Image (cartoon, rainbow, N blue to C red):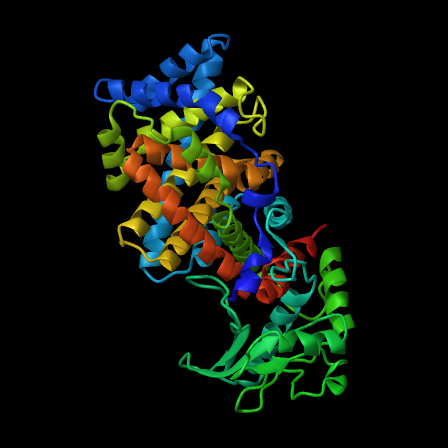
Length: 499
């Protein structure tokens, strides 16, 4: 990306009042220090479950014993779930699964006792919450030159699925060995000019590749193809627009044996969307894949939240201003915990301090009464991301690998929310935890823990944060068109059902 493009992106660091300011950080600082030093002093003689209520009560004496026990138990159980999901996702990725596929299986387990209608309604709440938080994040990443365009395409996803499903139905009917597949992102996520749909033979060999564009009219569709390099991919377009698009394109998927998908007009895609919203499907069996694809789409949105969060560095900057030059007792213990991964108590202490700050009105962006579990998730993501930054600094990870791990942290944490938070609360849990408030406050907490591990660790984390921030901006810019037609259009995969 050239200098002009890079300069066109304005980030929250430069243009907006952040959800946590230096004055608030300074006021929270002694509480954070007391919690961490208390944990270090008691960690060998008390379990976290014994220590945390004691420390919470010392800072919130107005709370009853039962209230303190409830808050402490919620912090601990949330962190336990987040740790469990993180380990599970790591194992799945190590075995070759994508994070989106893993997320879909986790959602299936979490909703196994629900009816189909209840499941879709719950997924809709989950998806809508992520959509709202991503839109809030997007409002903090502005463009003066149309570089990051995240406007939703309401029927792009359903068109891709329609072509793949009708091709496969036609192939099954004729005995053709070929199958169509809508590709899901792996690794870095949707790369620039990435393929939408492939046709594979019976051995999994890719025979044809397609890039689908279903814009409002032929001119817009043709222009969409001009914004990328799609060599080696056939251009799949609405049936009613093909004649007005001068460059070579196709209205169907086609295998070497002549098997094709069924053409679809732009209006047809809109009609299918309306048909899905009514719950009545006439000619396609969507039941087999619809909840799985919706769940995969939610996983994509979680990954997008992480990517946009990586482009926002203000929380770490506030931590640098507040904690630069500060020392606490037991720095080496915290550093060892972060390196070894045995940092459950560190996270519990950080979450307890943030909950106290919220209850005392110190952190205005996190209102009094915010569930302790939501705060624990903010801390979990913030600390895990700080650990990723340290690994980048020590060359254990490349910048791109670091971004991938940040995406995994967010996806696994959202899976934990899906498994433990009911439908009425899921919106608030995600809205606060993964919107600008959670991203920035989590960055502040992550940066704080970095500085608590020693000034060298803290400074390194903040420095690397700037590097990963620049890379995240590059990625966001390069995939803007793909995000428009895939990530945000995933909302149609949910709202089309039982809305």
